[in-house]
Every structure is written in structure tokens, then in C-alpha cells.
Length: 365
Image (cartoon, rainbow, N blue to C red; front, side, top):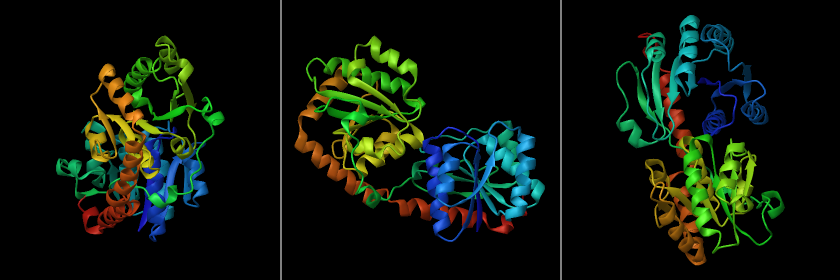
């Protein structure tokens, strides 16, 4: 199957990682894979490093302009199935598919995200045979039916735990932390701003009694000045480091005694799995996403949302029990291998693109 992944966000994100992971996996399974992404983006660099076919695009192009440019790509590469992640991209690709008189469109949905049918989305459904690829079975059960000609597919986020064996921890110098500090690594993306505020308030309550704690915030958007100002206002800036994007973040995670996940959607899912694959117990506010990936009391600790005083007492007790944390880390590694393997994600995408490649469905578009 000849598959195109079309992604117009320039910033790196969990969604971009999911696209790259799926593209590499499908390529390894014999599909011809092309990634169309923004010129100068990290996804472009990662695509080149992976040796995948690359088309550089402008993320701010108009829908009509993007569709016209993409029409040539579809014809030159004989694309049969395209994968997108948002409504705007779905309209661009569906328009190009219609003009090129070929192909189907799959829209991937992040864990526990929802699909909204706005005007552009409804138009896209009329232009090309379309289907959905969900990240959890829970979401598949509630998938919309009207207008989607290709049955909803399930491709769970997964990782290869064996790839984490030789990850070296970042040094305290790299983490901008004291030499003997207990590191809490906080996986952040912009959707986690309010959840990070709870972390800061919790840290303010803990810092006076647990002077060896140091929080390291990493991920897209984590060097935002507003975050620094918030930490300073709560008097915890001396025990917090803001690192920004750190490659894949695994070396930062490896150095931590505990991983605290405030990122959402794909970024949050990957962060939970990364920490667990590295045998690092996870802390997160209780949510549908966190409960899906983290087994409370077994692989980590799930907390009541926004309750910093209760959170502080729970986290203090958690940090004091080193043997329990080690056991949770080991349980997390086993959970990733058993329930969230990379192979399941790739098998899901493989089934989805093969189903979408059924030309009898294209004719109904």
C-alpha cells in the first residue's frame, strides 16, 4: 500500500511522534510511506533521519493552495491512503484526493479525544472515502457512523520496551539540579499548564520539609516565561529547572526517581509509557487518559485533580517509600510489555490502511 501521512503543525508534539512512529512501522512492514510536513520542523528532520520519503510543505498555506500542491504529490507517488490528524488537514487531503481521482483518507484521533463535525469536516466527508483511527477501544465504541464510509479502526499507542534498556541518565549538571537531589521529572506540553500549577503548589508545600527534592520540567512549551513567573510567585523557582524540548526526553526520565505527567493527549500517553518502560513510577492527576495507562497503586499514583494539600501528603509518603517505588517501576515495565507493545500499534495501522485501500469504497465517494 502507498501511504501518505499529512501533518501541517510545525511544532513537535505527541501527535507528531505518533505519526512518525506509525510511518516508520508501516515502512518496515513493506508499505511505501511518504510524510508531508512543514519545512524546517523537527518532524522533517526526524523523517529524513528515518530514511522515509519526504515532502516539505508550508503549514500556513490556504486550503485550496494546499490541495492543489498535494494533488501533484498524490499523482506522482500513486498514493492510495492518506492519514491526517485534524479537520483542516482532512479537508485539504480530501480535496486533493477528489481532484486526483484516487484514494481514501484516515483521520487519526488522539486518546480520549472527540471528533467535532464542523462545516469543513462535513465537506471533506463528501469529497473522499474517509475513516477514523482511534487510539483506545473505548473511543472506538463511541465512534460516529454518519458519513464515514470506512469502518473505525483501533491502533493503540505503544512502545518497544527493549529500546529503553541502554538509555543513560542525564547528569545533574544537564538537569540544572543539585548533585544529590531527588529528581521529579515532569513531562509537560501546553495543554498541561493548569495541571503544572498544581505541581508547583504541591512543591511549595513539600519544599520546606523535603529540601532535597528538585523538579525538572521538560517538553514542548516548558521554557515559557509565564511558567517561570508562576514558579517564582509560589517561591519554588530555586527547586525547579525548565529544560524545554530535550530530544526524546528519555535521558531526563531515566535520571528521575518519579515521573509526573501533566501533558495531555498523545504527549501524555507517550510520557506515561516512556516512564514505565524506564521503570520509573508515574504520578498524574486522575483522568480517563491517566487511568487507561497507569494502574493506580501498582505502576504509579493517581491524584485528585487540583487538590494540592492532599496531593502533597500523598506525594511525600510516596517519595519516602523507595522499595515501593522500585516495585512500581518494575510493574510499569511489565505492564508496557504486556499491554502497550509497539507491535499492537503497528498492527492496528496496518489493518486500517489495508481496509482503506479497498477501492470498492472509493467509488462511493
